[in-house]
Length: 135
Image 1 (cartoon, rainbow, N blue to C red):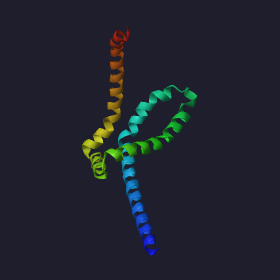
Image 2 (cartoon, one colour):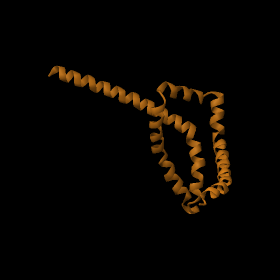
Image 3 (spheres, rainbow, N blue to C red):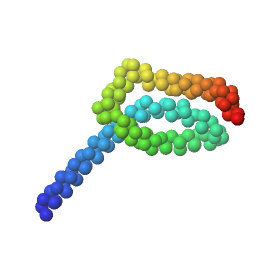
Image 4 (cartoon, rainbow, N blue to C red):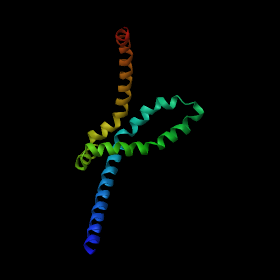
C-alpha cells in the first residue's frame, strides 16, 4: 500500500510539473500571438465593425475584443503543436531585436496593403471565373 501511495504521489508530482511546463509554454505562445497578430486582428475586424450601425459599433467592438483572449488561447495550442519552447523563445527574442521591432511596427500596414491587393486580384479573377462557370 505504501508503494502504491508513493507511486501515486510521484505520478501526481510529474503530472503537475508537466502541466506547469505546458502552461508556461502556452503563455509564451499567447505572448507571441499578441505581439505579432494583435494589430492584424484590428485591421481584419475593422470591416466587420463598419457593418454594425454607428451607435452600436463601440459596444460591439468591446465585446468582440473581449473574445480575442479565447482566440489567442486556441491559436496558442496550434503554435505549441508546431513549435518547441526553444523555438518560441527564439521567435520572441527576434521580435525584441531592431529588425523584429520594425517588423511588428509595419506588419499592420503590410496586412492592410496585402488585403487591398487581394481584393483587387479577386476582382480581376471574376471575368476568368465567369468564363469557366458557363457550361
